[in-house]
Image (cartoon, rainbow, N blue to C red; front, side, top):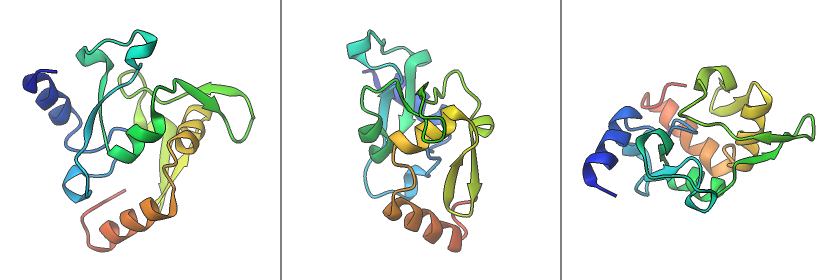
Length: 133
């Protein structure tokens, strides 16, 4: 993938994971350019299908397009940062990411966004005034 495309995706995301909103500068691993619709599902390496993601979100998402909503137990698509508005689907309770809709709840679950280590990192960044949910 061309460096110009990677840089465009990074700038568009303002240096934050487009799923969990963690700032790139405060994670221990480099962020990745993620295919929202995976290549194996015929997703293209075009700007409209690329997202900036922390390693943890990207690894948990993998090629998944959907998951089971923990509340309704129904198959639900995952959050798509190119099509959905983040604030409609997610909110914060301190350092804990809350899914406000079926899409949000499912994405939080599938991407393990509230793993204890992730919540602890966000809380540390909040305490330092670096991360503002």
